[in-house]
Image (cartoon, rainbow, N blue to C red):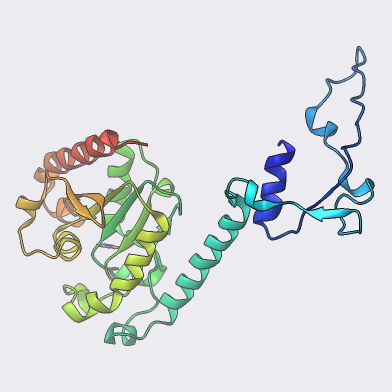
Length: 267
Ligand code: URA
């Protein structure tokens, strides 16, 4: 890492950086000796600890005029801050009592997968297995969903999977409007944090709630929709496919369409 970048990193992490007024001390690069390992560029970096008045704010030092530097990219700091936001959001969801589903749930089902995913899959609500295990799509339908993902070259852990509702509706009944409204902010914040390139609405109920429409699945499939400026496609729910195996071809079409939309997006 060059020194300018290093300084930006330190500054981004909130560490005051001081530099000497005097010209930099020449650091002699060790001569490469035959038979010894190659000279490693990183070991040529100035040892800031051992150069007086370079790191510590002593009299001969002045702070870097940061206004002349490009804005820091804040990689390490941003990553830590973002993980904290995820932890806080997860705790908020776990403690939620905004609707009556909190009385019957075993636990909330937050969502699972990569926080950097470019694919975000959103289903309807946890079922019995998900309620027991605390993870979305882990029952038979979930296993089929994982297979469907694999069919288009995606590992389950590469995508992020969530549901419109974070709690199981009793007897797997459809989500009610007030439950969807109570949970909306959690899903919204997950989408904002992940910033996926594409959202896949899994099944009719998820699609209708996300797109705020009553249109049937047959009308919603095969089109590129938008949610918060993110392309959204609708696929058959794997639970439906388990009941109607003859529909698997349609599911394959849905996935191929999703893949083509994803491929058409700029990086
Ligand atoms: N069906 C869904 O929509 N979500 C799950 O998590 C499981 C089954």
